[in-house]
Image (cartoon, rainbow, N blue to C red; front, top):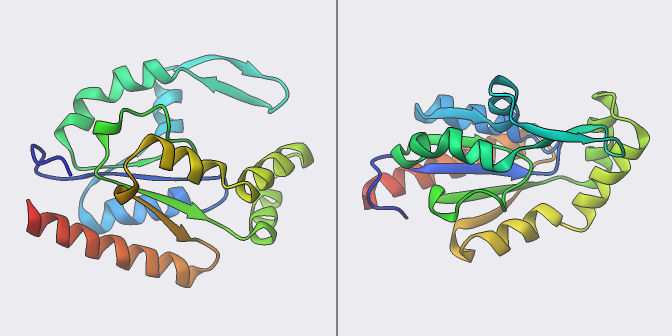
Length: 174
């Protein structure tokens, strides 16, 4: 934990479709923290450095995102929502939650979003191979990375309860 901040920074990450945005917004609202969706930050600040035709998506300017958010992250009190984690500075986060979703549930969620078959396949494979979890474990200390299930509304509520308990503990220890 970063003892110099009065409020923690939380990263909520996982494969697209695992419920990151929903959970991150709930955490921010429940704990009176600032919600930061990296996709929105990138759009608002035009932080893209190309386009990936195969994945049908813009390529994020990671250095630009870091530059835009650095001072805000140093102040603490943020819940960051993004499907990747390894490019963020390790010092930014006090805890990282990696959402995991059963492949059949994930497939249905992505299909409902209108993702192409190839994009669905890529994201389901990412989940099968626990790519985001492995990235997070490689980028941050083991003790701050937590894998949590995100298949049902009950999972979402349990995750929110668990994170709110962690926040109370964090506040008690600072």
